[in-house]
Image 1: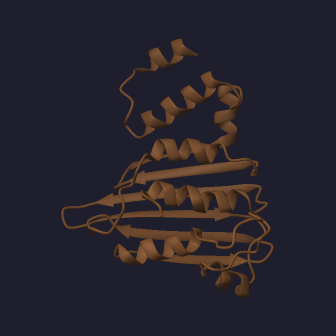
Image 2: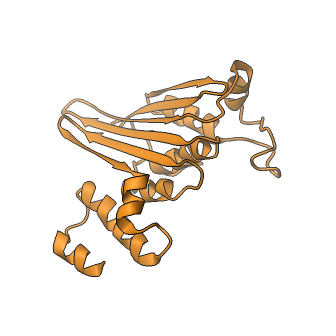
Length: 194
């Protein structure tokens, strides 16, 4: 089971990264008002996609193609997504076309007691950016009206000189946390560490 929504998103994003896609787009939207809040994510890839019958099988936890993970007898990513979204007063949508890609959307009522906590979004974004596979991964994040940012794997990799060394990974983590408002270090300190 997934302890946070971030855990759930990593699972779905990994599916997209392993789909043969050259582009994965990841949108995370969060709205909060006095009456309710919603957390929504959309993961879109241009990978191999699924035919209608494959899409139906993907929703069944007791079916797996045995190719991606040869020793597994079950495939739980999509079924856990469906269960979590429905239990938390949210919903889901899964669209796929063979040879064109897949779009997975899920939304959650953040006031519902059954909605898992969001978890460590910057850490989750860092993990997703490090997945092998797609040439480009784009993350778009928005909170309420007017608060948003976008990061691209290719631009970050170029700015950091790749993701192969610890220093680059530390800077990547600090940068993503600063975008979420979670890193109080000023820009000079981060640049000095580089």
